[in-house]
Image (spheres, rainbow, N blue to C red):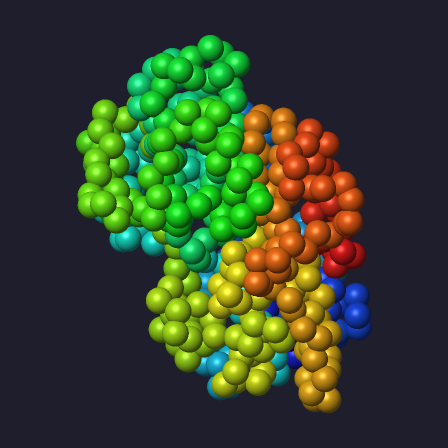
Amino acid sequence: MEHHDVLIVGGGNAGISLAARLLRDGAQDVAIVESESVHRYRPLLNYVGAGEASMALLERPAASVMPDGATWIQAVVESVDPGGPSVLLRDGRRVGCARLVVCPGLEEDWDATPGLVEAYAAGWAGSTFVVETAPRVWPALRDLAGGRVVFTMPPEPAPCSATALKPLFMACDHWRRAGVLDDLDVHLVLPGSSPIGVPRADALLERTLASYGVQVLRDARVSSVGARRVSVTTPAGDQHLDDLRYAHVVPHYHAPRWVAESDLAGASAAGLVDVDPATLRHPRHGAVWSLGDVADLGIKPSGGALRKQVAVLTQNMAAADAGVFARYDGYTVMPITVARHRLMLVEIDRDGRPAPTVPFPDLVRPRRATWWVDRYALPQTYFRRILRGKV
């Protein structure tokens, strides 16, 4: 049986940046299980959906981002034995390890929204969260001059759910500039009572929604999609949004089946990996660790949160025998465009308290400079430094 010291399942931001950091710190035998041949900087998908970026800008061959010294196992995981620990691959190989890190991300739960797959295929629905439909969002929204449009935020867990507001606000700003916003009936389906659950940021977002004339359905979930209709369950009962010109409906998410059906999972209905949210270590399997969207950390997952998670996990894997652990405070970040070229950056800890990376300026206040960093600087930082374990 193939065996490695550290086996990382998942070659996204979490897996690649962690592997690079471990290797830079002296690890000798790190392997990454990742089946995809293309690596994507997913935050740019929202800008693709607003006509401000192309798919070519966010995609790289997976081979080009694999850290020097890491073993790439290009395969699909079939099951996991956390007690081994080891993973069984779909091709029949079993790979063992001394330490296992689980960070495959989340998968779309298409069954949770009947009719959504068919609506995506028909072209009148899609989202920037789904790679295949992101390039089709902007052509569908750009030339609308009237009619009803709906946008949704997915319930947790989801990969940075707050960024589902980006295509909404960028589209509304475009329609206002084109002089057609007043002729559009724009709806937003929120899973909670407020946009993101951070009072000061919510106050700004509520004013922005009102300025665009967006009608908000709160504490609501999309129950089904069909015949240019989105059906929504709300506390007041079911509502139906009919005769839609376009529906930006983000699917619900859950952990991969092999995670949810194993002893990795905890009490989460979505099958997330059970971890100590401070140390990132599995409570029942001491050789297993997890980070990223699939880990049950009690936060709103985001790519920006991984920087601190990787730093904590790297330290804790090295110090596990001594039992002296660094602690992850639940830092996460939500970048939200409120117009095509203005962005607010909301940074909080696990308890929802402000956790700004820099003391000034106030990054919650929407700024053009913050938008520029999000759109142009961070993608370069991601490929040149984050994936190389330098941040």
